[in-house]
Length: 144
Length: 144
DNA sequence: CGGACGATGCAATGCTATTGCATTGTTTCA
DNA sequence: TGAAACAATGCAATAGCATTGCATCGTCCG
Image (cartoon, rainbow over all chains, first blue to last red; front, side):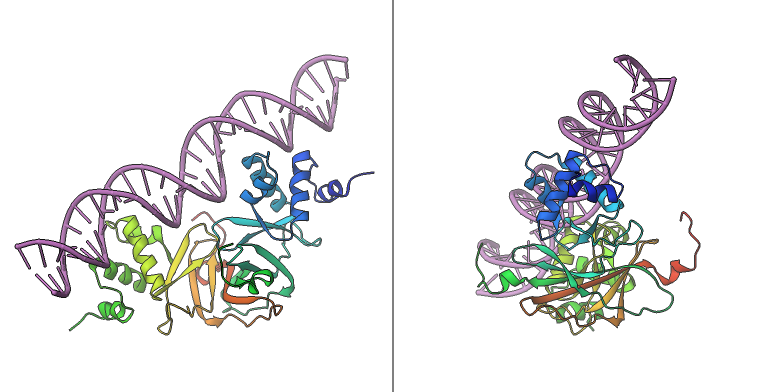
């Protein structure tokens, strides 16, 4: 029987190499969006460049989407199953916690339709909210 | 009579040095948001670090706001008069043109109120739309 | 006049993303 | 089976933006 992780990659036409399975596994286990450095740390012995190219491949194949949360580093999170390489369905809000610096997807909060002057052709909308996440909101300010 | 540019700085409690007046002048003349490198180029003989610190000061004093448009470089644009250092009123949509790579503020397009689960404490909302701007939309794809 | 303070500018550094190139591993086909 | 063809990997090196350290300069104030 083929491993579920392998099936996920094959469904996206990505060759299921060991490294890619490891990266996918990390992404699936982690609820928050991960930066390149995050993945590198979580995998211990992984090469930074290989992880970088793996995430690039994943993005091009529509398996993950990029999130620019203003932290300086681009983060990555798994897409919904219906995403395609041409059209990322990451039309949900992303939340960046200024305390724990974690970025999470809020799949239940849709990005509203916004009307622009007719001359504009919109290809993509990115909506990032910043503040305190559910876990950090109740904790008084302190150095973690 | 005090120069209008000086008045703007003094109103924000920023000492009106020549360099700051130059940077402010560039920002006022330019309709699109400018990156650090943009300002540096437009001022020819300005030092990159000084411009950087000038923009940092302007941001802290509530004169300009930072825009992360995903181009890799942070861009800056003048705030509305009612902005304060504590609360930036940049609650308008920003538009990043993927063709001319210019980022512009759309003051007339407000960011809609978005309800999050109660546990979240929102401090800031950033909404960037990407596509073709009014000027580039009519031009057929070509290498500029 | 002289000290204090802020602003400026040069040099150097850190961090993230990215490319070049050689090696490894796997698939394909004769 | 064996060898070419191709993709994936990993080390080294580079590029670009942001940032800090430190010395200098200029101005304001006592």
